[in-house]
Amino acid sequence: MAKVNDNFLKLPGSYLFSTVAKKISAYQETNPDKEVIKISIGDVTRPLAKAVVSAMERAVNEMGTSEGFRGYGPEQGYDFLRNAIVKNDYNKRGIDIAPDEIFVSDGAKSDCGNIGDIFSVDNLVAVCDPVYPVYIDTNAMSGRAGDFINGRWSNLVYMPCTEENGFLPQLPNEKVDIIYLCFPNNPTGVCATYTELKKWVEYARENKAVILYDSAYEAFITDKDVPHSIYEIEGTKEVAIEFRSFSKTAGFTGTRCAYTVVPHELRLDGVELNGLWNRRQCTKFNGVPYVIQRGAQAVYSDEGIRECRENIEYYLNNASIIRKGLQSAGLSVYGGTNAPYIWAKTPDNMGSWEFFDFVLSEAGVGITPGVGFGPSGEGFVRLTAFSTKENTEEAIKRIQKILK
Ligand SMILES: *Cc1c(COP(=O)(O)O)cnc(C)c1O
Image 1 (cartoon, rainbow, N blue to C red):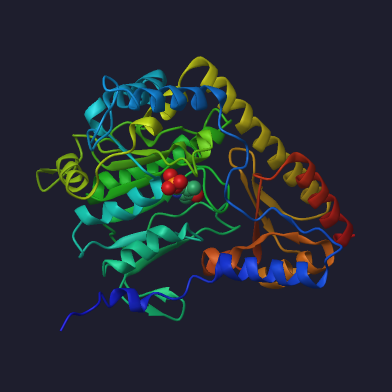
Image 2: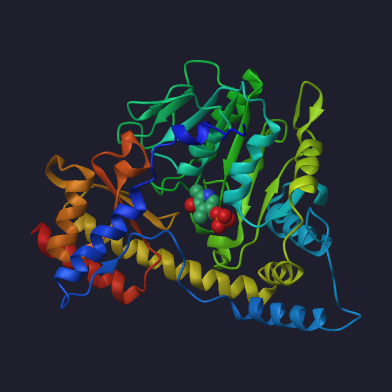
């Protein structure tokens, strides 16, 4: 008799965003005259850069000619894109990465999840709390997380990110094998400095651990002391895999293109992880569409860089509106300067959901309860900078009014 992977049966329902959506539409139905503003969604809204659109149009037309037609491309991505990534995202910052260390994919979400394929199920995994749920759920699906007991997985090491530690994970007391880090962070919007990241690289080198570094929000970094890549820290190539995405950088959430860096120096027991990931991708993945990769390449053109930058600035301005607005209403707020997320402490020790309900029913604004990202998120909410400027301003005005 066939059997299911019963690790899936251990997963708790993922109720966060569906509950948020249900509560918002229920409120909208009972208050048809009041327009709900959502600053809860982690998805971009600005249109694609014109340089990207033109590059994709040209590529589509090429595909319609017999000379320009292309079938299966390289599983790892076309050279034109791998070279552009190396030059712009690494060489320009003084980092030496080879094109064959870049693996182009359809998303950082898939890569962060799929990377588990190349690691033994016996590895002890550490995750931040609160966290982007993909890291936890994919480990649970492959049996690496143990059992879900009282809101926690028995085999995972949780690193609480709290107001006391500035929302920065502390080095685990026990020896862990795999560490997921995400900076600029989703959901807290907090960043790690060189000094902070150096601690992790040293820990990983000492303990022969591997850091899985998600830097999907790299484009939002504005502070000088915040590294754009973990490879800016010396000795990192032996211990870290980096995930990047065009989703938040260039509005590709619906277009789909990302990449993962696996340096040749990264070896476990003499085995190069680059070779394993290459084998995994060649077996299970047939590459990102040519048209999309041409669009991604155009992100690095002069016009593409300028247009994408304008969009990032637009979101960062919204982030600043949220930050300042909530601060002036008396809330403690974090993030929002190098990230599109603002992590705000609820007033009067309200619970995350309690404050969510209050803001929805009294202000008609949809936000996200922090506890949905992990137990340490209780007492916080996440607000996002991805709405329009007008809606962001209106939402903050409404929240300020109910906090008076
Ligand atoms: C949005 C996001 C990504 C990007 O995922 P894609 O699959 O490339 O769209 C990766 N990591 C985090 C933490 C994110 O929030």
